[in-house]
Image (cartoon, rainbow, N blue to C red):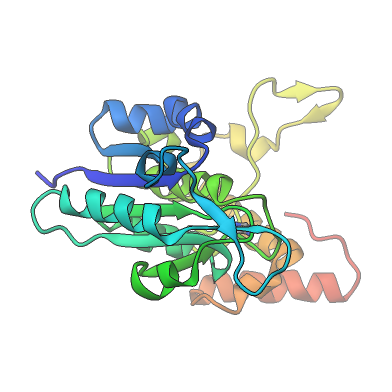
Length: 258
Ligand code: ADE
């Protein structure tokens, strides 16, 4: 059996993450022994008795910078205690990193050991970037207070796609982005709510028609909301036919209905 994935996170705010990893799917993935998540307090690796982990920026200017020594010590300890000779991806969360997406989640979910370093304040000493890390990742073009929320976003998205984490009913194959398209619309009980009904086809029990309807709706959703995604995927001849028709209706000003 494949040994479970190990995820380590180095942060100065461990409590921000500890609560989240004890809930929902992340909790279940750990209980099922599919992943082991360890949160490390950077202050435990500070060299002085006041547990100082940050300092002023050389050259002046506002903001504090995370010092290199505690980060090096923390990373070295985690790496030296790793199982076997597992390769460790050492990831710094920073707005300067490569933008995270579903493809990156899939790529990271195939690793055996990930180590996240959460930056804070003005960032981390450049020597950490130059000598320790393998990846810099951003979760989008905006600046947050630190890397803790980005680390949780990334961990959540990659753990849920690890084999065995989601059960069949929760499976991710139809998720938005998973196959390069946005998801199709979902409905649940009641059948009729405030004069609004669930599409009759979904109640028909005709599974091949339902599958077709869902594919059409996913294509329509993607065309209307994120047409840029359509340029990045290879579509079947049938999909292309559907898209052509959707575009024709859109351009002729007709409402697109199925
Ligand atoms: N730290 C601060 N902002 C961030 C972002 N957008 N992504 C990753 N880490 C960050």
